[in-house]
Image 1 (cartoon, rainbow, N blue to C red):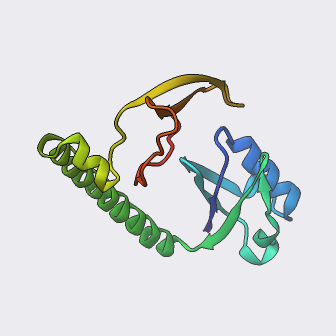
Image 2: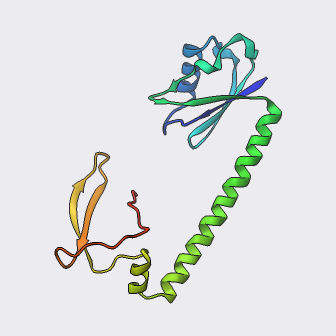
Image 3: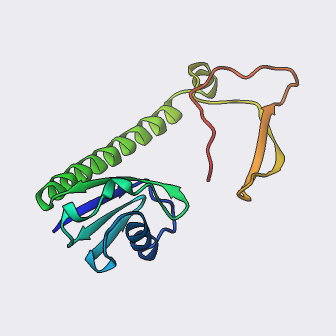
Length: 160
């Protein structure tokens, strides 16, 4: 038994899509797929068939998107899972610390100072800019005073 790790899965890809891609793009028997576990954009696939009897490298896409596939032995998977869990937790802690730092800065620094640092935009107005291709509302922001240029900022666009 061994595992395939499939990365870059599109949202909504299901077990049927995975088994279909495996059987159509390789010589893998559908009965050889023992278990599939999904986690966001990747999947762990437990394979019973011998690794020499099919070519996992031939898997290029699952569903409508291209994917990356790697083969893992059982002990390697435990190491990978441990690595992913550790760094997922570290990223969560870093995100919390960064949010606390920004909250402290907002409480202790004036808006003008934050704008000079590139972390705030003052005297703005928003205008309805319709919807994007996904149906999300768009807003175009500009200065209240026409012609006034925006300062350099650390602020990036966001989608919600």
